[in-house]
Amino acid sequence: MNNHNLALQSRVCAETRKWIGTPYQHQASFCHVGCDCLGLIRGVWRSLYGAEPYDVPAYSVHWAETGKAETLLEAAQLYLHEISPEAAVPGDVLLFRFSPRHIAKHCAILTGPSRMIHAYWGRSVTETSLTPWWQRRIAAAFQFPHING
Figure 1 (tube, rainbow, N blue to C red):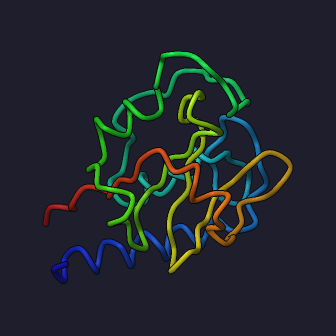
Figure 2: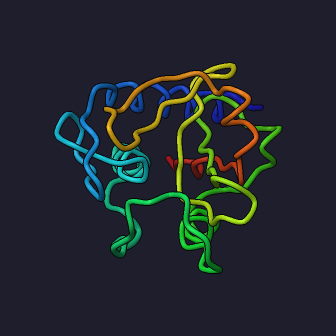
């Protein structure tokens, strides 16, 4: 990993930690006001790059959904750099699925060895352990793109 990657990943972790305590609110993305798991990723994106690359369509609050439309995974593949989950380091984005038959519907930012920050129903944005329960549900991992300049 080069110094540019380390600087970006450090910046991602620092920005993500600013969101801790933000109340959960479905489809919101405002630090200290309200957000969901995707809203957290969107807010970190805005702090790094400015405007979001596209308007996020409406989505359901339930993350244990079945179906074929991998909307979250496909959007991540368009705007983030996919890596193997085993290669994920602090500052990387993790996507989760409830079970192999469910679509990916939850995301978090890795912040340390077996630590992540995420938002979920009934909780504010929080830093928690990446327990074996969560590890078994990782669907994909991504890095934020390099910042030019």
